[in-house]
Length: 551
Ligand code: NA7
Image 1 (cartoon, rainbow, N blue to C red):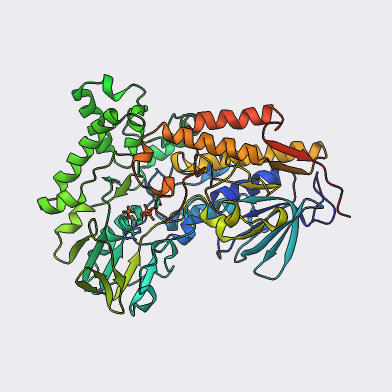
Image 2: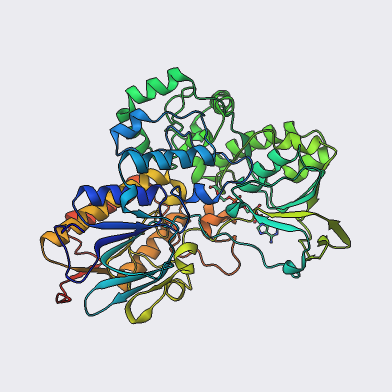
């Protein structure tokens, strides 16, 4: 092992990274560039993170692939070419593998190795991480790149384990695929995962029962092969494109596609109905999630939001022939307050004779039986049951891990009543441990790859400065966590998001608190807060100390 600039005695690495998604690969590359000794552990057999685990039928990334990609390497940007406008998990994993190989990251990545326990030693300020392979490795710093949508949730319906057919969760799909030909299949959940699965398997199954509770705003993805001309043009101007993406205002889901122009900056209420129509028609035609970048006040003003909600409700109703079904499937809540769903021919699926919608709005699922699913007096007999019921977002992956900070404190305990972080980057009681793209950050409302890159850069500069000054321990204060939780609450209250139950607010998990889950103040403000902390030498909300060397 090479001696790095800040090598702590009796440690194996300066930094251990957990998770080989895009955040983890970014962190590994950056820390290595700076000369730190670093090792990345990944439970899955290969890199790719969420795209390794989520390989359900029909899955497509809902941000253009050319945008949903890493921007820190000119070589990677120029040498990789996307085959589709919106790629599926296989291509995203091929891309992650390309990045790992091209940047020679693989030699510092240990796949197929879960971190079972991470334990902080208060005397030395060093973390000891025990792996599923039986090793224990010590490092000064830990970067948790475990993802914001990682820990699947399955509602605990009575009789869940009695089902005699096969069960699947969208987020843990078998790599070899599932053959549903001629089978009676039930899908529970109609978020992005459920909608994409339903649209894809409907033509293959014998009979499909969709157990449907809340209708979402589902919009055509309009995926197609990547035009060479477009790819060449973006590559020639990648720098400017990335800058536009980084400095986009509220939503941050820049629709960097060739069919639409700049994001709109004015109020929906100042525009005429004709202007609304023209803008929305253009977005509709363009496809994907380009509606995230219409009038900014659609996020904050109910009247402005209604302009867009009504447009999309009408578009959805138009696509459904049966008026009763149209009524059930047309969303009523303010658009954008729950994630838009990108789909291909979703509503049209309900015209098929083999597809049946089970309306759960009034009465939910009563139980899972050995033969299927019972709702009220009706038992739906099934061969297979698909749970597309989402994630314990933002906090789930760390709560599920055995991470023991000061006095053995775990995230499960510390975040029992909401996420407690300072700036979505660190938690009190967990010194020298950094969280990327998760709790307390703007991750749900910004392009997570960009956010991850900026957080990694911030952490990398911090570790460099500490090392130069021989400071070996940093930790936020509990008061700073209170203030950050308050700011998260203040920023979300200023928006329309609290009007709708969603994973953004933890409302998809019974009993979960929304406190501190995410920062809703926009990426520009978040970036300024990160800069201020750095310029202020981390004096606000962090405690820096030097512990004796652990010889
Ligand atoms: P989501 O968006 O959280 O969707 C979960 C779905 O599961 C949603 O339709 C839920 O209905 C439904 N659900 C959850 N629990 C139940 C019960 N008990 N009964 C019936 N239906 C239930 O998860 P996805 O995996 O689709 O997408 C997550 C993100 O991944 C997505 O936003 C993209 O960013 C990518 P509900 O709406 O709660 O009524």
